[in-house]
Length: 218
Image (cartoon, rainbow, N blue to C red; front, side, top):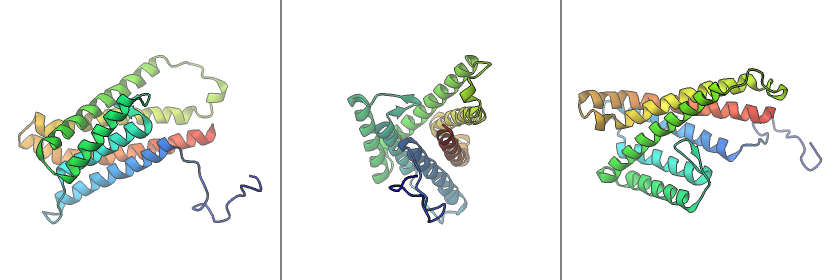
């Protein structure tokens, strides 16, 4: 602390913290996903007292995907350079998501469902494959400076593996009404989809917390 940057006297809540863009976006994404999952259950158990725009849900998720692409250059688990191609993909995703939110139903809603389902399946497969490959190449004796953060990194890897698996299941649940256009598909979609959303959102928030701890330790 210096005279130009004195310690805060307002307590813990008013203390200034360093929050990277990726972590801030992950918190936003996690809160939105958990809230969306809870709201779907509210509609299911309200007996018709509440209504929810189903195509708008997909539109909101696609808008979040577009923000991920535009702000972080990340899509389907890959970190890319923000070229014009990546920016155009982000803009197209944002446009499709906004149209689905403003104008429910139609062809755009079906395209959004397909895009979100496939992107989550691909992302989940890449995450799981990357973690399995890293586990095979792991060293038996980590560097001395890594010993202190090794438990947190191990926990982060475990949570990331769960996130990858949940992403695959989430992608399949998005495609369930298309793959199984029957009562089983619709019931599975109605009950499984919001639960997966809530689990995924909580896992994202927990991963963000671990990442912030690792940044503080380093």
